[in-house]
Amino acid sequence: MASELIVQTLKGPTSGANANKVIIPSGQTLDMSAGTFTPSSGQIIQLVNRYSDGYQEISSTSYTDANSMSLAITPTSASSSIFILINMSTTLIRASNARIGGKAKILRDSTTVVESSNFQRIGAGTDNIGENYLTVSGCLTALDSPATTSEITYKLQLAAETTSNDGRIRINDSSPRTRLSNITLMEIAG
Image (cartoon, rainbow, N blue to C red; front, top):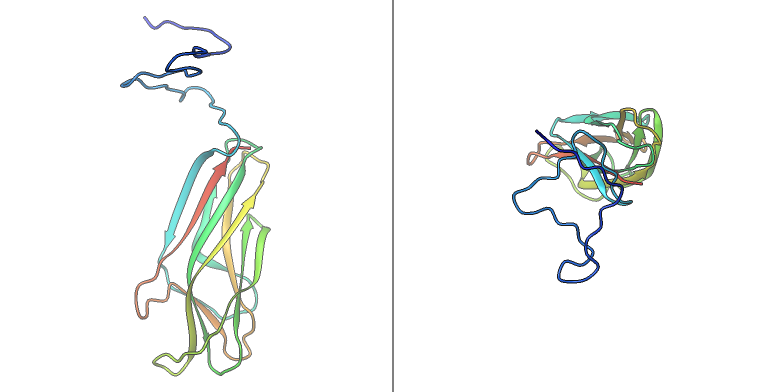
């Protein structure tokens, strides 16, 4: 028959080799699955990640959802923050020598968390079909405080800065090699 120990505070000895430590012996597990564990501020509580290798081309100055670059998380505490890390493989294309750029933003559901009005601009170069292009691996990060324990979804949106020179953005362009993007969410204890 299992026994139950009811205490308010556990403290280790104040002196000796293990001063101020409460030790769980080797081979033993502290099982908190039936209750709630309150971590100290700044600790990572949970982490979720999603990879995307799906090709997409965006040729609009209006923000467009990036395929497979959305991810849901359910915070365990309303005081938590969510750290968002997005790595994206993008290519800017233009049909003339005029400057072309890309815009990006991260949303929580329908609320903008952070926006970059110019995450990259075209550089010199010509690909095999005579277009000017620039391929980069870009990174967007943000720290959000959603103040909820309900499920929320973060997503990436992209837009061309201008389409007057046939400007467009390609995500995970497979030429000349397979490209990969990903979104990572980390819940940080408040």
